[in-house]
Length: 353
Picture: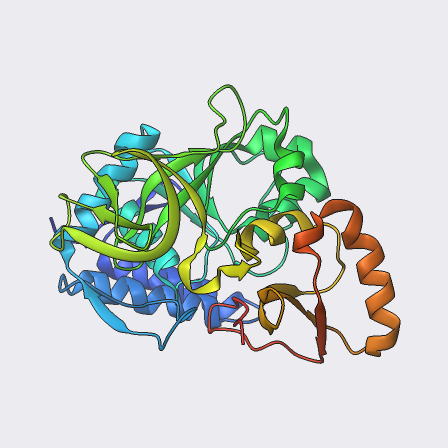
């Protein structure tokens, strides 16, 4: 297959038509950069040499890699099978095209004959689509969905059949908002190397679960550290060693615990910062993360880093008052650091110092 035809807003367009459409968007946009990046991704796909993508850089230097066309097609088919996507299905593209999820979303539309609607990923999604529009499928990051639900829950239900989340853990606060929501919300597990998701976890409805389930012929194991090993027979690279600590249910189901390089070993207990943060994201009105700090008695203790311009003396009593009723005593931070700015990766993820 060649990536040279795409349905946009109900009209099938050839290569020149696609690029012309994206140029037109850029000319009328307040900030044309997002459309220009889509234009660049479309041109890259049309060369039929694959997509250049960059790993997130959360736990090390970002790495550039080439995703071959065969892998893009295989990943698209895996998604189509998982969500029963068919040619002509209306889908929304609301992810930045400089990152792998946005690039692969465009590749899916080419490969599957989906009817694509493009919007600027910044700002509220509901403000950029008309109330009458309906979408069978959209991929979002958690903050986009959270904002949309707070703005107009009824519109989310009316306009979206299925939403795939990725790009970071989902907070307990967001999961609470999903109770009773008619739109199917699914969390994907994967990476740039896996060409996005290879396992899914339903977050609401009758299929809601705490475990991820493998897609297609993908299957899983654990290495001696307890980290996930993902086997992806549909891709050119069939095995991926991760730093994700998991509880392995069987070779196609697992529960994600946290990152191996983030775990806190405190007084003989393993504390997973990501699990604490899932509970505290809705409690603290400041960007923050938990990490280990040396402790003579415990070996390691929990440290909390907060992003704020307020004096530390003011923040500590406020923050501890909010946290203590919701955390186990061994999870209480024994040290608090306040920074005016926490370092972030290019994709906006907090970098744990």
